[in-house]
Image (cartoon, rainbow, N blue to C red; front, side, top):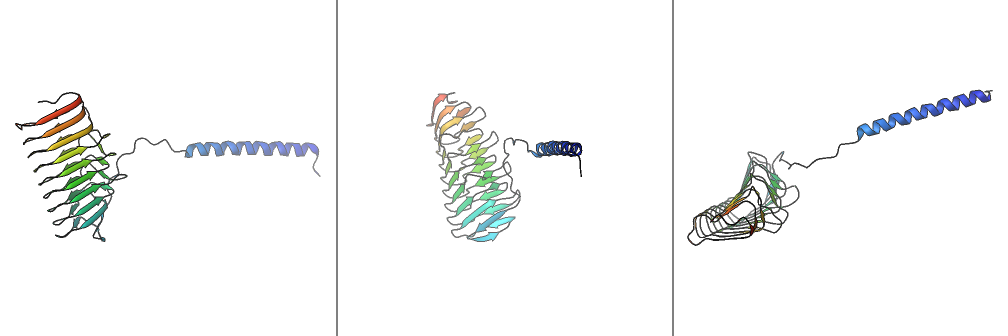
Length: 247
């Protein structure tokens, strides 16, 4: 039978062992704590995932028909192309676009939704021929083109740009609109014909807004960059606050 002294020594040793174990567990827990994440970079398309009229097409060439198509893509890989061809097409982009998306002939509707959707630096969206409607609700680092026709390009609330973003109406009487809260940080150019550019937010110090050929109407709420209606004889250029129009 153990004496009282032996029992006390055993309890003391047990307490020391438990204290040591608790210290090791605390150190292990601290090592496993993840660092605080910084700003999240835009996701890039690892593969092309699209459906054409409900049928999956993996790429590299996603091709519609000459009739009315419904094309949905959750990602478009760099070097891959979405071609809607003719007809009144509906193209919905819900994820990163690193390749090319082209509406083809016809009155097309192209929508870049919010969330993970983005036109990245190598990505481009082009309405091509026809009076197209292009609606942007997320990040654009690459190019957006209206193409030939009287196009309507709208950067809705929640969309974002960078200094390298390139938005052009191309040929036709285009309307390019930036809703309130959207900052223009890249190039916006209407190009040919009598175009309308309406910026309800701010043109930042890296932003450039240009009308192009034709009698253009350009309105900017707050200009901290460059706004120029360009060469039309009957251009209208209005800046509510900030740096006035270049001409």
